[in-house]
Length: 537
Image (cartoon, rainbow, N blue to C red; front, side, top):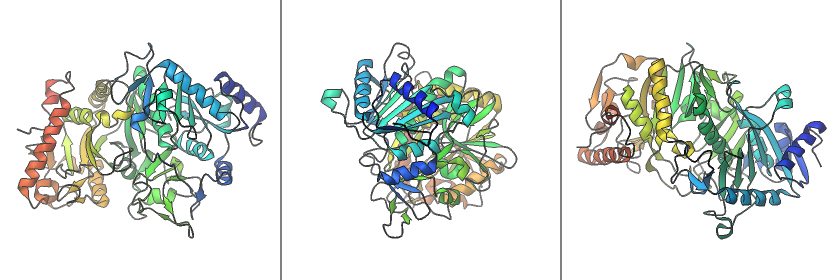
């Protein structure tokens, strides 16, 4: 049976293509349904409920964030020498993958299937056609809104270069299936397929395809980046690198600038381009005043994950973290007024590295040399915030190479060399901006207000920090502006915000030592890059 809203010829073709993957016996196939139809089906199937403003609100169950311990890459001869194998990129045997794929196919028999065809990459010359197959209507809505939707003409010629099959209703047995838990997210580059089992968290589908792009694009001379991007009135493009929770989406959704994308981009010889067609924004403590563009986007067609909604008024409580702090919303980029469509931009004038320092010792803003940019890109320091991954209950200091190690299958130096090449060729200025804590560490101090960070970033993007005086932080080896955004000078040096200066020195030396220890693994880093890091002794 096929869904009557879709052309019969297209459905027949898709059914045949699924059969070639060994996926057969569906009760029905729903292909390329419009958002309104997907919302109707999600409500009919009791997958969620509408908020007062019309967003579809869903719960993802046990998995409210990514599950990195359940992520695998299938180890085949074609990719074996290219992958940075280890605790992040865990190998899976091809026969294990095949057994899981067959189990997934058996699970889908007799069920409704939702199929979405889309593109990754706003640059038409470098885009990847993808297909998502899921048993959830709301997953199909999420994919429809997050990825780039083909035109009717493009859809006729669409053939997936990668396929994602998501079955949150299927649970695995570690003893029987050779997995670490009941869940598995496995990428098979040879089969050009991703299987996503037992987790309903939609971010797994999104990040799996990001990982795919991060593997494929370097071979095409494109630098794939875990960053957001926006465009100024002067045509200047800015990039914001950072892990989840550091402010990529919030800071790029600037009413004074035009949004290009919030999370995943490529930097080619022609400029930058967004991989996606939508945003995936954190909702915890969301406010209309601080983040008006995101607030106004949570309307009909948007999907909100794990946001608590009042049963009577249907108003969301963005401060309620009883389900998770990692509450999320997915919606199309064109929900943001003035968004750049197609989502491409010129070579960036400014690159911002974002960190959320839970120690409370990093300066709010500093300018990086080329070597310093390389050091901090490879280091990728931040504090993982509660809820972004399973088991993270409070901020945890971490180093994630390239500001996105969980999504980078190749060795970090591959991406670092691509960054160095782009900086050398285009002369982009790089700044390190801390969106974390001052006046003490997490639990004692206070997080830097978003309004203050916005003003700092505004000054950076307007070039106001290019002419001010700087002084060197002796421990972190960073250039700190003496004046910035009308802030008190004491604010710009984190030590001056602490009452207990000795406690600051102790915490700062501890973090500086962590930087040095982490960087030892980059044995082939040039001496000048190593010398650009902190100096704890």
